[in-house]
Length: 222
Image: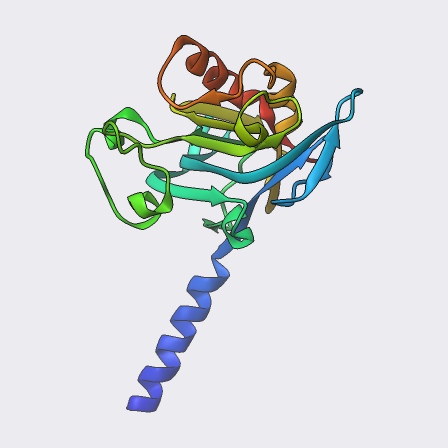
């Protein structure tokens, strides 16, 4: 009897697993088409300005897969901290059913206002991850820190701690299983002038302007 039960359970698990597949989202931080490595000096733009990135972190949340603008998979209230220091965090694995079709993805950069209002939480939202403002209630949505010869600051450092939840939509090849999204920091730096704008640590008009620009740096890599 036990043997029959075991065979039945294994068959059920096998049938269940055949009905499911995996879609992997990978975020690929780049600077002018080159992978970014922390603490490595890079040169960019026509002036060959130097740049060393010490920290790059951001939250991805509320992932949805859509087919002709209709949601077929929704991961509401799921939050992922993408941290270049930990390469394993650059990949998000989604369990999907084999019978769904999708041709676009939508997700948030940062933590939405409703979640922020709940205060401190655990997991990737744990304040020990270094993404929670200690001077006010709320999460940092996007953090970029480093050194540049363009910065007229102590030790040529720059720091950007941005709020402002942003939603991003990207068209996809039909039912692609490996979604590669470039995070083009050079696009952001071309928007900024590190010689004059090198430290944003609190809400301001300038911070909001940069936060609103963030969706432009997330580009589908076909």
